[in-house]
Image (cartoon, rainbow, N blue to C red):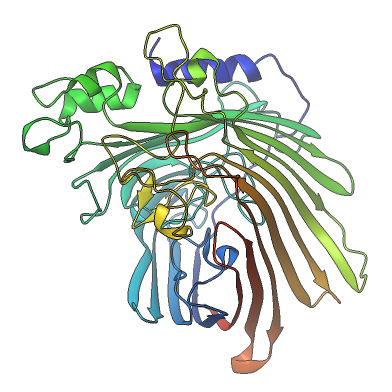
Amino acid sequence: MNFLPGILLHTLLLILPTFCFSQAGYIAFPDSSQSYVELYGYGSSNSRTPFWMQANQFGTISKISPTGSARIGIENYWNLSVVRDPDGPWRAGFGVEVVANGNQKSKVLIPQLHGSLRYKNWELFIGRKKQWIGLADSTIGTGSYPWSGNALPIPKIQIGTTKFVDVPFTKGWISFNGFYSDGVFEKNRPVTSGLKFHHKALYLRIGRAGSIVKLYGGANHQVQWGGKSPYLSAQNDDLPDGFKNYLNVIRGKIGGEGESVTHFDSTSRVGNHLGSIDIAVEIETYETNLYFYRQTIYEDGSLFYLQALKDGLNGFRIKRKNSYGDIFEIEEGVLEFLYTKDQGGDDFVLTDGKKRGRDNYFNNQQVRDGWSYFDRTIGTPFIPPTSDTKWNWPVYADNFTSNNRVMVFHLGLKGNVYNKIKWHSKLSYSRNSGTYLGPFTGSPTQFSGLIALQTKINFLGGSIIKGSIASDIGKLYPNTFGFSLGIRKDFNLD
């Protein structure tokens, strides 16, 4: 059985025996034109921006402090057949966002630049676009394990759905949400060059949109492939490329085609494959929405042989539906536990039918600059680049991360004060063990926390003022206290 089809089959076997009652729903995409301008300032007790102030911000907030930041963005969608049919299904749109950060290493970033064509709940887009992928909380949680929103969006072409879409003839009892895409990584990576990107996901929901209980399941699949690497590659540093190898990448098939295939490729797979299998349960009551989720990690095949089952992201989210006008209210809470220490064990065994072991998350021996984009982890920020951590911990060869065996407890909260001031917090505690081949001594612990507030003011006809404080206390990162203050003006250009 091929790698990805096997993963998907295991997922379907988990979710198909379940059943629930629900009600169908449909969300249209109204014509819209929204834009914003924002000015921000960041400062800290040293030259480092605290963890939760810059993590999971799509790579737009500098790790260097102090920093001044200016942002501008616009996103517009319009009806293509407004004259003949005001409610026509075809829509086109674009989005652009520019961020200028001023500090010791000033940069101008473009986190969004895309053009889109939509038909009902289907979309084709080209370019960079912010996305949250996976059955995990994307607001006050730690982010989806393989794709957390920690790095700049990767430019790609993608076709897929924008929401869960009913499967025909099921009367809304079964729906799906998914996409298929290909893209490219940055040119000037530390080790590799010319890397391509393949990305797809499929999630199913059992139960209609208005169900009291809804069940979710699915998988995502990410691959770095092609290009050049000086490690475990053929002549001229070439990695397997071409259409035949692309088909192997899609399927996750062992082996490759052509002269650039090495022993490493033929006994493994073409490219660096990783992802997660996700399951979730959502329960609606009169007062609350309850959401339980689990992301199980796969990378080097250990999961296929039922190894590394301990590893993954476990989460619980609760949302209140009603506000009672209290002075201080908690509207939403997220509790998560991330564990990546097992990795199939310390022994690597290649023989089929036996455990793989040493899955070495986000590292790869051909793609030594790892699961990263512009030196930011694409997945969970709790597996950081070696350059992020303290200099006195062992460096694992020249791989991307020296710390992928972690255990994290996380609490996220969101609410309001007097129904006027919105606030949220992220509080995380981790134990860090390095890697199997470069273990840390004593599993250093780390606390990272943030409290952020925002409220509306009358300045410029209505603006939003924002502020936050954050700290890092522990042995993984330098002890840091930081703050931010900013103002945002939203525009509607319709």
